[in-house]
Length: 106
Image 1 (cartoon, helix red, strand yellow):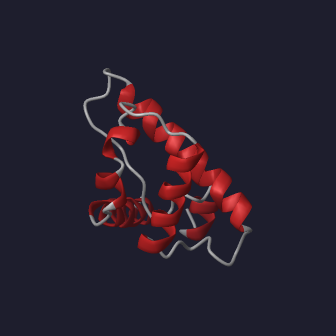
Image 2 (cartoon, helix red, strand yellow; image 1 turned 90 degrees about the vertical axis):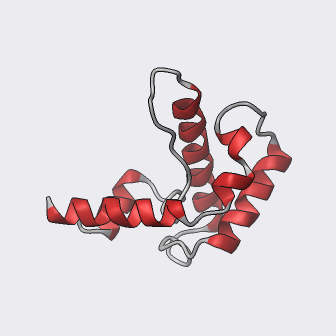
């Protein structure tokens, strides 16, 4: 339980300091489309803002694919009026759930 709490705190802290979520807020809320050009900007800014643990461990193409899946998940969550809170991207958004769990030994 303690490890999961630490991981959750790490995720919250990295999300809180990200300008990326502010710059692409309308896109991440599903209010503006995310085409290839917009995703490329998200990817570029993501790499500038975050020192992802996945960098150097897996290919850039795999990281980009996982980030794209995370963006889709964030948009789906944030566009659903049933949710009372919003989600965003963080330093772990280019990792799968299994990679995240392994990184934090959960």
